[in-house]
Length: 251
Image 1 (cartoon, helix red, strand yellow):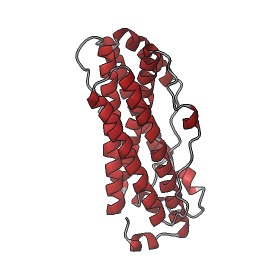
Image 2 (spheres, one colour):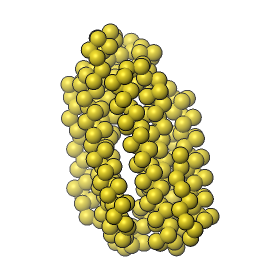
Image 3 (cartoon, helix red, strand yellow):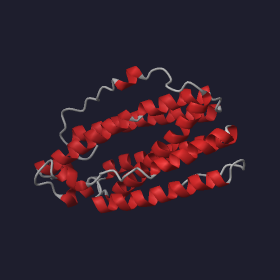
Image 4 (cartoon, helix red, strand yellow):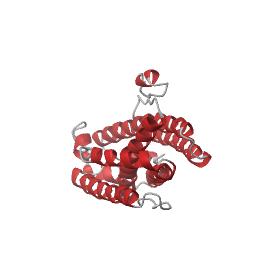
């Protein structure tokens, strides 16, 4: 946790922004856990190797730890409410919504391209940029861990896609073509500093960055554009090389 002196030196507005930011980061990380759990049984349903299934469970536990670390940082900056949010939609989707192997493959392709290739990759990019600007060692260590593990989650998604391409080439080609069209409808998330600053008047933008605060809108958009282009390129290469050995992963 950040040293007490570093936190005490911040204005109340800046502390309030950081407390809320880390609380919301924790809730976002916590909400990622079910996706990896669900993917594990989807993969088992279509006969995926144990290495991919275990990768899902490892990623889920890493997301749990990310949430715990974010909530701990939120409390260090003064947050009092770090309870997780209930997700009642999970109760309705406890059973598989896919009635066939083909539908499951399509869902896996879509989710691993969009949620894995794009969003997990972008999360690693954004958190890595926050870590690079952070000047508080304890906070930077948390950010670096999250960035490193989010990047491994994106790599897992590309490994899943590579396996699906070889195991279900016909279904994969159709599903990936459709998933690429989904990318065209996506817009950059609004993970920017002004959103948080307006929630606590008087927050110091420079102090926010020193303590691992959010990027500004322009930085986030630049990382988004690079990530989307890299994802499209990698997916297109997978389609072109259908039937060949693994095409690799996005860096």
